[in-house]
Length: 154
Image 1 (cartoon, rainbow, N blue to C red):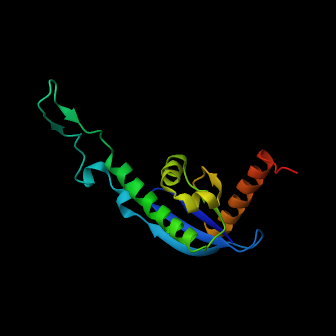
Image 2: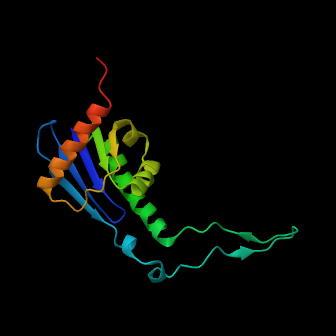
Image 3: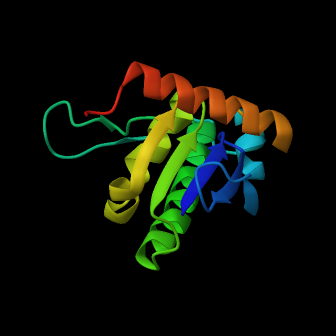
């Protein structure tokens, strides 16, 4: 069984496909409303804070992570935990992921061992806006192009 995750930093849809030519079957929808916040809405748009210590030049600044990026990372962690739990329960054998490049990187950084073992394809495509019929077509096209670009060994 294959699972297909279509996600961006604020929403995700999870599908299953029992066989390669079977239609996509929705199994979950996720949203992360905090990812839509503007930095001024989050209440934490200040730069890193300073602190002093007894060393010369003892002012230290914490690296600043944009609040929206923190929320994107939280959502990636939430999705990765769902996938890892399902992998541990043997709910899927293969995983394909479709997400915009920046969020795809966030997701992959959070994937656990079980998810990584099952990950077959990670496409940097944002497919979240498409309905099921168009999604089927675009996924089929992306998978076809991936097979052409990387032919299987004979």
